[in-house]
Image (spheres, rainbow, N blue to C red):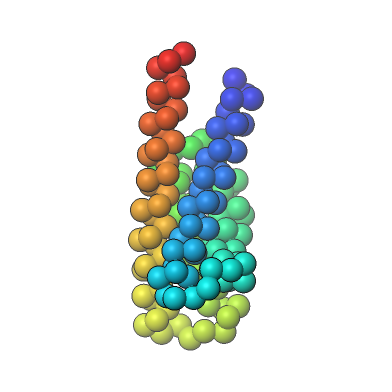
Length: 129
């Protein structure tokens, strides 16, 4: 049972990370920027760092509920966007608010789609057992 729980936690964590990386790739492509390591790091790493820092405290993977996911998402994306703007020395103006809102919306859609798919697959696997 513990082994299965750890495996599920790892799969969810990797899937969440892929969603954030996918957001960065889609953003680069949408803005006509080259899809490269530097752009992905610039746009995804701040969010991922905060995500990995807060998820143990919010029990995002030891108790994978929708509520825990949403708490982690709101804190990590908001703080990650703030951190990105601080590191890049960008102004906190309307552009910041637009980027923050788009990042919140896009990552939420990706994460909810991923977690919904994961839940559907898990239910099908349980039904077969």
